[in-house]
Amino acid sequence: MRIGLVSGPWIPVPPATYGGTERVVDALARGFAAAGHEVLLAAPLESTCPVRLVPGMRAAEYEGLGTSISELSHVVRAYEGLQDVDIIHDHTMAGPLYLHRPAGVPVATTIHGPIHAQAADIYRAVARRGAVIAISKDQASHAPAVPVTRIIHHGVDLSAVPVGTGSGGYLCFVGRSCPDKGLLEAITIARQVGMHLKIAVKMREPEEVRFFREVIEPILGPNEDFVGEVDDAAKYRLVGGATAFLNPIQWSEPFGLVMIEALATGTPVIGTLIGAAPEIVEHGRTGFLGKTEELAGFVAAAAGLDRAVCRQAVEERFSAARMVADHLELYAELIEGRMPSGVPQVPRVHQNLLGA
Image (cartoon, rainbow, N blue to C red; front, side):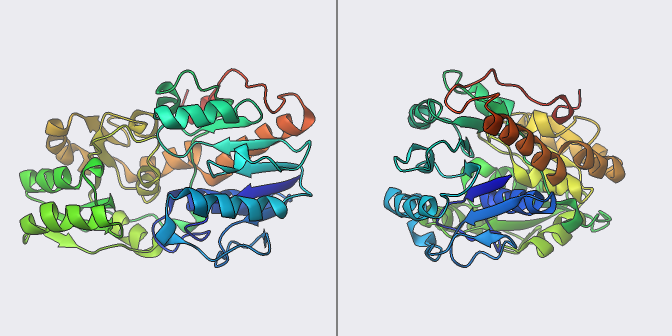
């Protein structure tokens, strides 16, 4: 297949630090190429993903993160360079609605964020002419009126993730500096059990800085070690050395890539029982899920979980290889017309994704 991939205009592929969507696009591109397919990637100019890049793309525009004009300009350039492919997988919101996309080429898009009312309007329109991929059952359940073609969980390239020993004697938190991610709750949990907490957070946006300066920084003490934003290698060392990874999210997160990254290092996850967490963490086997006020009570038990089982769960259910294979299956169906673009199908999740 000749596969066109479109990433957003704001962060290179792969990302140096923060960038969940870009990390997924990078894994897909590499996986498709390794499987013998021709890949053409439309991404910011600085992208280093080892596949052919669409020429003429602009440099990453992080300062315009989330703005329509930045994304629309990026989409126009992307589709100008994707005229000779068999299928396009677009990870932007605007792209699948672009008027001048190549005639006869099926377009698939992945919903990477929550499907709130405005997003639902967009994806219902996208589904009239393209395939819509959700990243979890929980995500899809919040907008039953959006015709989801397939549910495909994210995967991680395990060759890039070393297995840690968990011998550091600390807990860790990795995420954005915002109330929804549960940093304040993680600090409380670590103090309740008397364990040191290492904190790695993205803190670039004004609201992220404000939350840290006004809420988190004033309460930091000797029990916390703030390490800031880290690259992948440092992240895997940090998480791999932890007794457990704390993920007390306070919102219905559509997936949570950092959870499978933690499990890939062998570190069990302790988190709240909301969003897609129950689709990722096997309670009592690879971690523990519960209400926020219950999580401190799981730390001792998490220390006794088998780290090899945590890694094995990712190998079986959340590998990049599995993610790539699931996408290639969908692409083949779209290209062959067995699932025509614009005629949404009944959603299904591959059984191996759910451990069934």
